[in-house]
Image (tube, rainbow, N blue to C red):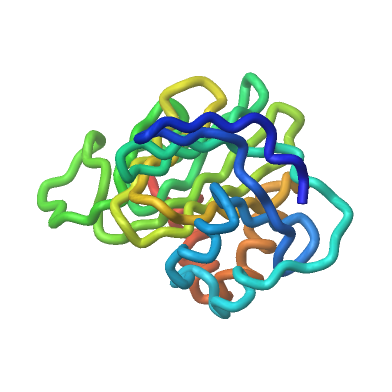
Length: 206
C-alpha cells in the first residue's frame, strides 16, 4: 500500500489522499478513504460479481491519478485533478450534449416529464465519468454508490463526487482509447450493463 500522505482531522472534517488496491485485472484500482471505510462500504451493485471489488490482486503498478477526499458532516467529497485540457463524458442518463465538461449532475432519479437541456437527471443513475486526456488516452471513474451523488465537472480538468460516506471509487485506466476503458469496465459490470453504458456515453443526445 502506498503512503497515504498528510492527513488532517478535526471533530467534523477529515481529508487526505485516498488509499488504493489493484482489483480484478491490470489497470483497475479501488480507492477508499481508509481501511475502516473499505470494510464499512456497502456491497457493490455495479459489479457483476461483487466479490471482485473486495478482492485485491497482486500488481506492481501504481495509479497514475490518485484522488483526494474530504469527509464533512457525513458527506464524502472525492476529487480527481487531471491534466489541463481534459474533457468529460458519461455521467449517466441525463439530457444535454454528449460532452459533460462544465456540467453538474445529480444521480437522483425523477419523473422527467417535458425534460430539456437543463434537466440533470432522468430515469437511471450512473455515477460514472469518462475522461479524455489531452494525449488521447482515456480514464474511467466510477463512484460505486447507490445513494444520491453529485457529479461536479464545472472546474477545469477536475472530477468531483459528493455522496454520503463511505463509498469506494473505482478507476479504469488510463488506457489508450475510450474503447479500451469501456472494455475494461465491461469486465467489472458485465456485458449487459456495458452495452447500456456505451449507449448512455455515446448516444445521450437530446
